[in-house]
Image 1 (cartoon, rainbow, N blue to C red):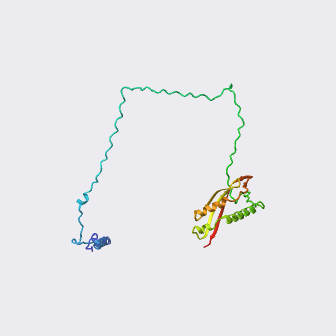
Image 2: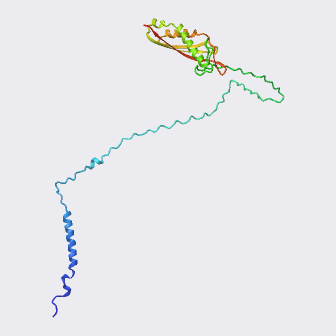
Length: 239
């Protein structure tokens, strides 16, 4: 008995292919449906941009630079050149040669003596080799002579200084006078300077220091030198 259906008309022959195509189409439709969005036309405000305002640009005002005028042309050369004669005649100076000849006699030069000028060298009292010697301080070494000289000067000033002058000037309390002087190369006192609360006290200090006796000058490397010396005078004014 022959089959009624045509074997070529079998519908289930490509069912797997059709199933895959249908599944792909359904997935595509589902994805499109999920991602699809709608917008309310009334709620959308796209805004209006006025292009006219954007296009109006301000053109900067430029200043025209004025170029300077060209320099004037140089003056034209005169057609005729006048020659001015010198009215004053200038005498030419003849420079004589200083070269000597073999025939010229050579003068003999006598021996030239150079006179040495002694400089006023000052050596501080603290470092001088041999200090100035006050009368009565000839004995002892350098340190003993320094101490003896300081004591002698202090006693001399205390004996001759008029301490009552400060009270007469209306000063009170402790008074200090700084005195600076120099012992010259001949042993005499020079260059007395004083600083005190009153000019009269400065004058009195200078008067007393200038009365110091002549000393034996200080020696440095065997030569007499100037020795600066400073002396503070301090006393109390009795009220």
